[in-house]
Length: 216
View (cartoon, rainbow, N blue to C red):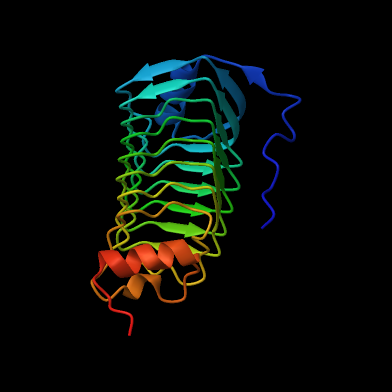
């Protein structure tokens, strides 16, 4: 999968106060474009239903913020803290989440396309009823998170931790889990979610033991 480089075309960007930009975007029903925000801090702020395009967030902190139905195009979150924030029904395309803390984040009914998530923590996050399409996940933790009733399409995984993660009613067909940790994942008793998925021999034996399958 080719991820579009989101660091391009920022030569005319200028740093600005994030709160002012959000206030203006809401009042004018406008988008936020071609901006760089660094070391900004927002707590329990309403950032919902805003469109971001070619925006960089660097070392920003968004604690318990509301990004409901916001849209992110060619937007980067780098070394940011978005823990306990709500990204429900958000849309992402050609974007990047790198070295971020998203523990406890809500991404319910979100849609991520051609987006890379790397070296980030998503423990206890909720991606239920979401779609990940042509995404790249690298060296991330999703412990005790939920992808229940979601769709993972053409998505590559590298060194991902899914301990205790909920994949109930989520088809993993075509997904390579062999390089990931999948201890105690929550799936149906008949293992239907794993049909067509790729697991290594150690994972297969562990699943057989957990679900009480006898080898004869």
